[in-house]
Image 1: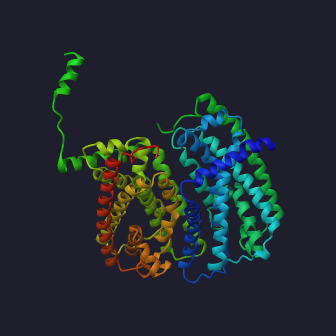
Image 2: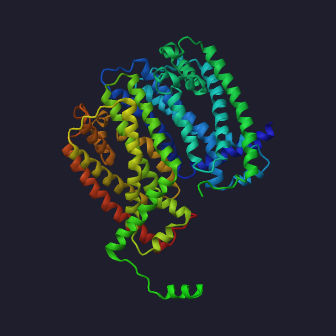
Image 3: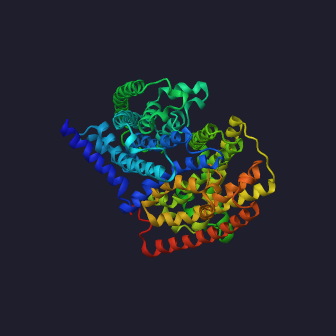
Length: 283
Length: 288
């Protein structure tokens, strides 16, 4: 187990870090890594502020701020794991070498996402800090339920990694425009997971999609861990206890690991049979 | 007549080459053609490039609904969402284009071809604008139907003028960035990706830009979308003028100025690129 981690996860994480960061100096890299997610949150803050008569003490303010901030991890971990396959196959043309090397491919995918997880964490921490200092985000470090937060993060990262592996392996079999798939999923999850508004606002026929996504429960638990009682101000999950949410998130995460294992086997077989490991899409 | 005879006859005929403005115009049309035809051939591109910005737009509409904003704000978001298609087109298909061409090995061909790089970039801009118009139109139509947006256009002529000037300045900026991004090399990819949200933010794609305060909004006015969007919103909605940053007349004048500045800037930057490519011979090296 330790040998596998040493041979796959660590080198993949290091490679991912180099790809992400070595195009410029560290200062520029951090500035660019943080500017994108921070301004993403600021868009919502200024949308909120632009509407007269709404105070920052309204529950929706912290709801959308935290939802959007932690959604950074969805792009970092899920998209990081899925894009690594396409990056290696089409941009660097190295997937064929990775395939014949004695490593675990799913673990390699997760390792590649680690670099994005690190930069994502940096962006999340800075965004929360800016929110607390400049934008009246009601977070107090001493009132945070750190146990619930750690458990929720762990379960969420497992679910996101499993989704990333599944999507990444699927894109391996798509001949036309595979690059859009990861982005499409991230956009859809943003819309349906209640990241920036309560899912009650979705049309009734779309709400079951939100309830099927692990991100919905993950974000709700993150809000509860960071904000305490004021987080449960919306009717969506008001009847759900933290235990209910954790059980559901854990169950979905477990199911997603199973799905990732099955889809990996299937698409890996398909890619080998059809010779898709070193093809270039759209040509 | 044998095949070899045909080949010899063809080779002996002097080639009819266009020169001057005829070559310039034909180069523009030739480069615009694959932009329009190529993008409509790939149906998935149309779907994703319309669908993805529309998803984000819908998300922001729900945010305004959640905070019970006046209905005009929903219209603001839909117009902003439609305009993201142009910004993405400019960043990915204009600014990054010479870098892509270098990576794929086409850039040396562009440089040794007898036409100017300016005409090639103008062709890309013209074709890209036409192709993106379809996506932006689809977002506005879908948004209008889905969210029952009521437009109250106060001046069609001004609206067309604002849109035209915004696009001219925006694609001029894209042409200028194409040369700059080429000089950056691999950083271009990262910069293009990293610029997206910051530009959406400072240009007020999803909220009236005056919410940023006068100094920030003024600094952001160097990006054509900032004033273009603000003027379009002022002219398209009942409450638009009360939420505007500057008067429409001033915004039109600044947009006209930006069009000239970016047009000249693009020409100068391209001349630098061409000179470097010829003198150093390293700019077109795909391994750099």
